[in-house]
Length: 246
Image (cartoon, rainbow, N blue to C red; front, side, top):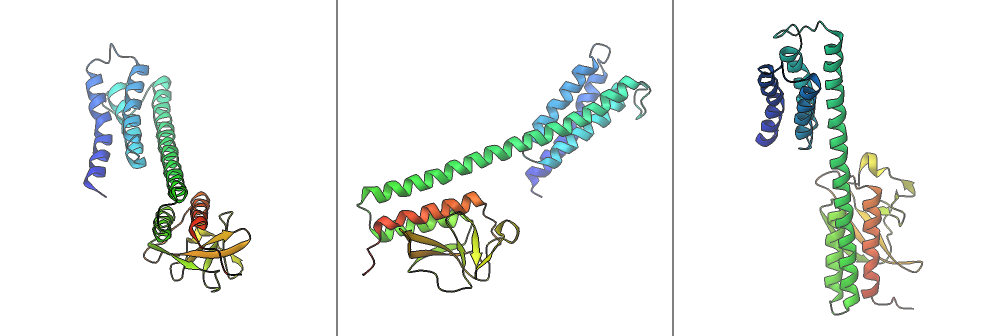
């Protein structure tokens, strides 16, 4: 755990404590609803950091210190009134729900950002090919770099011709992966680490080359969308490859 994350979690746990202690001094003028809203704001702030643990700590801390400082009997963890019990329970439940919603929002934002990055990569490569004044080797190098990044791989290089080695996993146009005629569940097991994965380059119905992808230092689990983007990137080099003989 990094120091920054540790600091966020400590702050998430302490902020509701300090808030409830302050509100205790003016509890005669502060309604239960107001106190709950203030505490939920701390949960939102903690969850906005993207750390689920921080959000949960803020939620639990808020419920605990709300009980201690703002419900009768004061400065005990007992609650006498049914309304206060309901308020404390709702505070924790709502806070946990807010944490999950905030984290979901961050994931969606991150996914949208990644999709935008993928699209920018494809558009950039397509523009490079359309310009026509870039050497084929440079175009292939740019595509290989983008494929490496999209698949979270270690390296990628272009090889002419079809894939003949049955040990090599092949990423098909629909994003599915096969190896020796068998489906590979990349979401579960990731790309092969002991052998290559190949992204074929098609000219009409013929494979004219393929990008060999290496992911040996770590297990990579590219999504179906990422695999499809890799195939789309690979297809961009068709325009710079010479026509095969015959």
